[in-house]
Length: 248
Ligand code: NDP
Ligand code: 8X3
Image 1 (cartoon, helix red, strand yellow):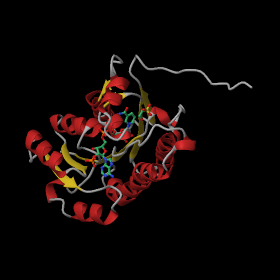
Image 2 (image 1 turned 90 degrees about the vertical axis):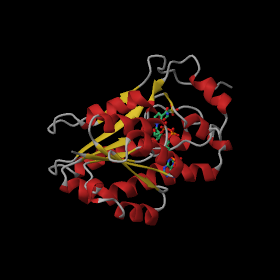
Image 3 (image 1 turned 180 degrees about the vertical axis):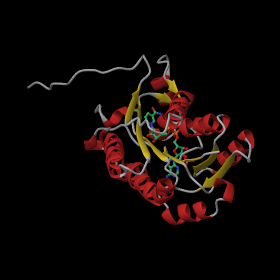
């Protein structure tokens, strides 16, 4: 039985992934900061299938202590899903809050890199896999996307670089790049504005956490000689718009 280590499992895509992998017979290490949510998740899915670790991905000491506490049954990691992440703010760069930019970089970039570095020896030993959650924001700029898009572009390119470095090890690396998924993402981005969240997803028939979780499971269970490098997904209701031109 294989074990997946999922960051950001207390809501949205990560939480849905816990259910998808556990239902498919994987053992799951589910992580996030909100311990109460993790406890509820373990109770709902079954503590024999899910082991929870509450820590902030930016806190390397807390992370290492949590990993060191893993019981034997969950200690051999075959797949790391670097999912924990967030956007903060919707303002253009000239009105953005620098602390929000730093929080996004610390979480989406620095912590993701550090988590990968921490588990890489084990993943190589297991001939395992890494799935990083990037975004369409990595490729398509939009107003107010600024630092968030930059962090996700980093995740995309870091994933390709890992692929290159891990050549010959058998370790697979994939960057998953979703568009609009209805989760707590917009609530977090807007500081808890439920009406803003409702306005973004309302009538758009967005993707769900379960849609992305099914894709993650599909990628994870492909035959070991296959690697999906990058995979971009959008709801049918979402597509692209043109360039903007300012005129004198
Ligand atoms: P949610 O806000 O629903 O989930 C985010 C998860 O990340 C939570 O479990 C949260 O847990 C965790 N997290 C955030 N910061 C930290 C931290 N410092 N330490 C530990 N865990 C943390 O959003 P989504 O499910 O949508 O987001 C998951 C990923 O998907 C993110 O990387 C996001 O950028 C990406 N994404 C989302 C899209 C969307 O449209 N929703 C589209 C493309 C990509 P807790 O707060 O308990 O710590
Ligand atoms: C989340 C998707 O388009 O809101 O990464 O940036 S988007």
